[in-house]
Image 1: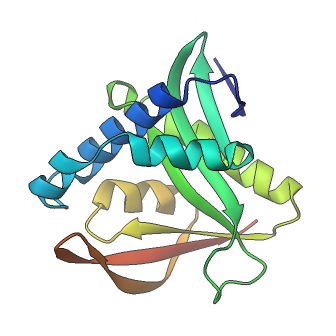
Image 2: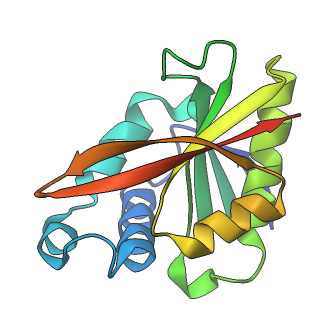
Length: 162
């Protein structure tokens, strides 16, 4: 098993499907069934192709176990922060430590890029994610309401000094 930066040789369709499967499992019961049922892998596949250098994959041979996305802060109220935009693990691999491996790599990569502070957003109802981030000393630091399809949800911002 190894973690590496995404390259043009990767199977973007397979990774888009990993994102889709993981997203649907992670947010089942939190986001509307209609919204989740209408998602396709294409949106993630396109995002991965547009900025492969921001993505890291956890692989075991030629099997994708997880993927994460990091970048400079997109939120203008967080200048100088690195952002963890996504961490998704194949649902058949949940609770095996793969998310922890991806998160540790995200911290390492952002630190190497010169960031000493990091943030991410999580759905307030996602108790599993909240516990996971708190385990790694990310602290709640604000929230916002966003519209996802026909549903208004609250996101919590988590921050960490590295």
